Length: 79
Image (cartoon, rainbow, N blue to C red; front, side):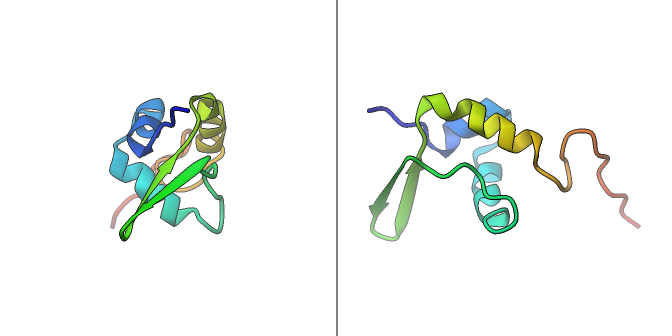
């Protein structure tokens, strides 16, 4: 079975892999990202993977995401 990692999810949403990694932490409680279909633990590193069919789940999650940079909302002005 082939899984898509953080870099693959990033390419689906046209963002950088560090952005997806940040989302996994930032929205863990308030608006959780689609859970991974597999997790591999290598020492202290966890590699997450999603099935390719889950792209629509990620797109729906991103469309409903609130906060800075969410579609249809201006970024807050800095004073």
